[in-house]
Length: 268
Image (tube, rainbow, N blue to C red; front, side, top):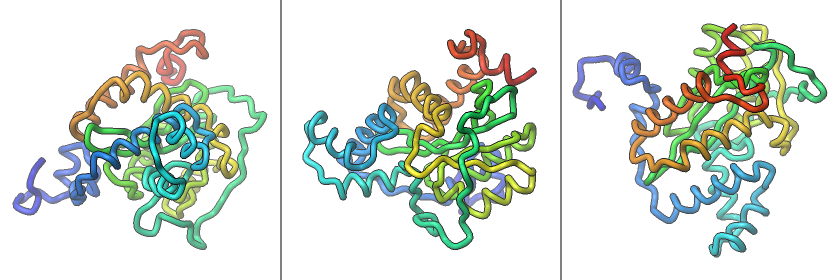
């Protein structure tokens, strides 16, 4: 990466050349301890398999199945830092303010009939050998096509905004569904959707399976890519996930789609 303090290139230009968010260039991570990395990775594995688990059941499983001795308060802190259960830490993101709004869940009983009818957006934890990153993805629920995604080292708002803007540059859904996390109740996100006249839907509080299509995507990404690799760096993670999502969209057949690929149904 360019040492931007000494470079003549503006930080925005450097970010575009490297396909990174500007926040990634400003961000200078502090190396987490091996113990913290190990605990977060275990929590990620449990939550990926059981997305309906809260901190109480995650703690029970760590203590009774993973051989750890850890209290619930510590597990809750790790889950908050991981952005699990719709809780996203960071400046002005740890709790909703008066401008943040909750919208009803609109997909119960809805028959999704065509591409761009319903999109889902979510954020998940991506483990590295000595740390972690965060992946945001937008998926078309009819075709399972990943319309847009971003990977970043922080849970700042920028990478969510960039993913949404990129998706809207080529397509637009009738309905966009998300959880009630602070990214998706923020005015920045809501205003983007309102500007495009997209109807907003949000999962019920604590109802992970309201966003089941995206949860299935996370399991696929992790079981077929992330957990099989041992990413040494953000660059390696970005390359691996980019390659996998290209394969997922254009080559991987889905049983639920009659063994068609997502691209064959979305790009029509």
